[in-house]
Image (cartoon, rainbow, N blue to C red; front, side):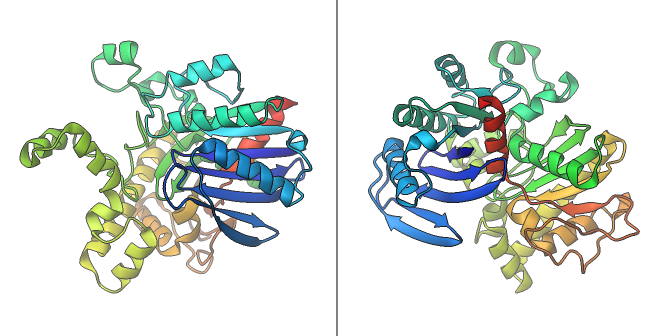
Length: 392
């Protein structure tokens, strides 16, 4: 069966087509600057990537263009050959605990979460509607970033604020990157042939989160009510003292929206280093002696280490630690520094084994009390597998 997996942003659309159950990727692509000047898209097929410049006024234009590419590249003769479409949606609130077939009623429920994820959810829903317009008879599935984390106990997801904020306004920890953490949990269980693993999953990319998982159940996760919480990231601050917000508003005569924009877009790696939000740039300049880049790298690795140590305690000792996503899969120096900062847990790296990028591999030494693995994530495959399961 051919499954189309879709990951839309406010001005972007990533997709791929996977043939299941063979797990054979037939094509992938990335539409960018939708609704903005100089829009373009990339298509990758048979290992060859091509870029095309085209005017994309909205997501419907992108969907129509995607349709043409699938036919032109002989992926399908018509869209009727696509058996299902899986859509990544950032927020499912506490309503959607699993992936679901998309109906008009589901869309209405999802629209209620727009105020919880105003930067992502509306655009993603518009993309879903665009596909439903073009592919009227094709079943579609919503896969939520938040659903995997709905297994958290109340003690973990309730904030110590006035309880009415939760009952009236749904203020609670939701967590994100759930599709990736779920994929990592499934993969490491299969690789180790274990069903009862206590896993610390470290999704480290431009956005970053850590998840503590006990036998398929999320115990805790670092992101919270929004993706701003938790770890320092490419442009996000992660956890800070909330009183800083009012203090900066007063000092710089900024509105709360302006301060939150700073925390979301001008903090993290770019905020501390002053040069880049990309960890690779920061590492390169740190190696050249740039003090702020050295500081940014050290702060980042310490924050990750702190969460790993805390989650190891919550789990009563983890069985395995997994590194995934762009930085986690590819940045051996960051992994090394993080592991050195959790030496008190008896974790020890094998430097030769750690010389790996983008491949499943054990990178801890034989003496390490907790094994550490690099586990490449594949959210698109997870979306496709969910879609296949539901449309069957």
